[in-house]
Length: 454
Image (cartoon, rainbow, N blue to C red; front, side, top):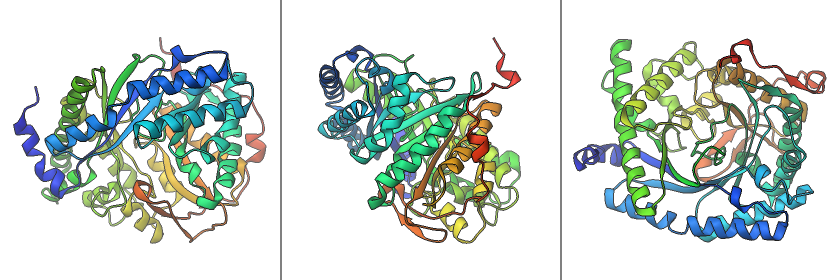
């Protein structure tokens, strides 16, 4: 049981170390909304979302005020729309109407984002899934709160290179359609390998088909808390370091467990998981990069960075698992460039490159996240980067993802302002050699030998 003594212990973390519950995300199944009539389908989707989530924001605010815990975002994830719309949608524009419905429903219940404009195509694409993928650029350009994701590979199935090629083209098109807003549409689009279906963090959240009709997932974040704890053991050995991270992650996860328990009681919806992910913000002192530097690096990107991140990620998971019966999602450490002031500083001092970030993704929670690159980067190069990340995930049996932003009209050295939690980012250089012949081969990269476990 969680008691008020544990809550009081977190007061200092909240007040001085930027601890927050990053999101309460309500997952809603839309499978029972399926209908061959597009208008009927949209009406069912709108009615179900607004009915289930009508009290989500008010309850989140009540819990935050009652316990003094900042709950930054209230969000919704839904069943991958490629499945929900498959009977009714015959063109990409049909899927765009569903995106508009999701956006309207999100605004009605006042959530920050709604995720699930998604397709799961790790082994092949149905006609409906391809239509949804082709609808993504327009969908993200005409909505404000809709987030999209596509899972193009897994350890069990391999990598669908046809989908990888298409997503490179769709990222490029999304950048073009939202160029008046620094290609911001790409910040709401994630390409996954091994996507978890209980992830509360946007832009990659969707409600998995194995989930209940509705669930509550909570995402907790506390990079500042971990950094402050490590300051007290500066110079100690790795055993002390690991124990400190683990104990701190335990305390942070207990906050998420408390919020989840209160939310499910008040909303009458089952608890899904707590996701403890050290997700940074642009605020000073709320940085994963600063944790790595506190561990002993002069700058993120220095030799030892990947090892330090591996240690951090593992100890966070170990502490979180002890604190809650249902830890899931991504749980670990995120390394988004634009959302982490320490990462931005490292890029600006030329200590951190795209290639080093790729190496770090072998051991972090997700992958190449919120990275601004030149607007003239080709679709084939984008697809090649996606394929590289998917290969890391596939072979290492972990989730990897790509959220790249080719900013139209910007080049290396320029800075792009996204605002809010999305922060700002320097435009990073990309290898200019072509991988077009590789990407254009088509077909599927087979699953690795260790996938044959049953």
